[in-house]
Length: 219
Length: 303
Image 1 (cartoon, helix red, strand yellow):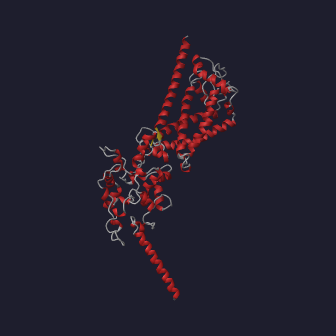
Image 2 (spheres, rainbow over the protein chains, first blue to last red):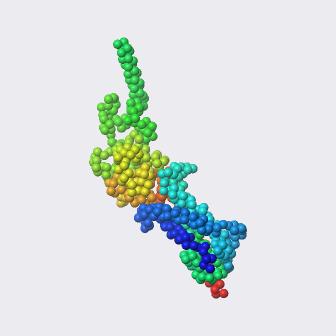
């Protein structure tokens, strides 16, 4: 049965937790710089900048690893929408989170070896990993070379555009992380999905899951 | 020989013509001095002078005694000090009483004693007050020119002069040090930051501190001094524009935003509040959802 949950192989789990830890470091150091003030009890601006830059490079490498893994090990297939996912599927999943979950109803899209994500997960992960994360990385790298950015774009400095994009992309991804962590508690037990992402297999080998994971498998 | 005479005659005629032209320029009404001083690039740049705060003054307002005829009886150094006119003047937005106090406390005045004059830093012919500066890079360039003139032996950080190399070496601890050197006013880090106890007018006190040039060991090394909501840049150079634009657009340090971007200093009240509100709503939302799940599960267990 554990092979049914081979959808969480080691490379993916390492990427996931590495990404989570590094993103958290970026969130703390990014906030420290945005709200910097002399003498405030937070990470010093200089230390925050050093960590933020270093971790930014590591996050880029991890993202490359994530892209490679998705292609090399076939994880990418789980993001493909099935027929009806974008219409009835999204509605069913939304209804489950708004009502069914309180009534103890079964998950509308049970997890199995062929279907790792529910339609809402597919949608949100695609947006996060392929629409928001790449420009976050690109804008971060652009800020490594501020002197090379255009002086003005539509009347605003190139640095300002990059910095604002970087800041608010990071903000929306941080909001995603909050919701993502919460939905991680929506397995059969509060800790089940976290354990699954840590060790790669459910608690009881060979047991059939009557209600597969409902929360967002984080990748 | 006749050929030599013809050349000599032509040369003499040319000299007479040149002298007449020069004389005509000298007696040009309203601008007698510029007739001689304007064409020479070592003298006064008429365009920059026209934009300066003193453009409306006649040259003789400052160069009064001994400059009336040529050759001048007085020397340039005999021109009166700025404080001859400005001493005791406390007309908003400038208060020369505070400014003079600041200069007297600066490392420059302490090192040079009574020899240090306003004109060592501020060219009376080209000085543009901060209230007329609408563009941050231009303001920085103008503000840094006098510093670089001595410390980099030129008005910019380009050119690879030994003094520039030394200056660069001293600033290389800064991230993107080239940008800091070319894009930040020297006085932001190299002048006093603390207001005097009991000072009631922050704007006037800022004029004093901006003139208290510190020894290099006491320069600001805390990045958050500039990269923060109450950036020292706002009190050192852009105070007038900054306060005006803060009120109008909701952007903190808007004058920087228009022309540059500083992490920590360029912020918008509305965006900051919106992000905090969205974060609070998200956390509250998942907390309510989680509490609802817990209560529903407990209810199901009981039934």
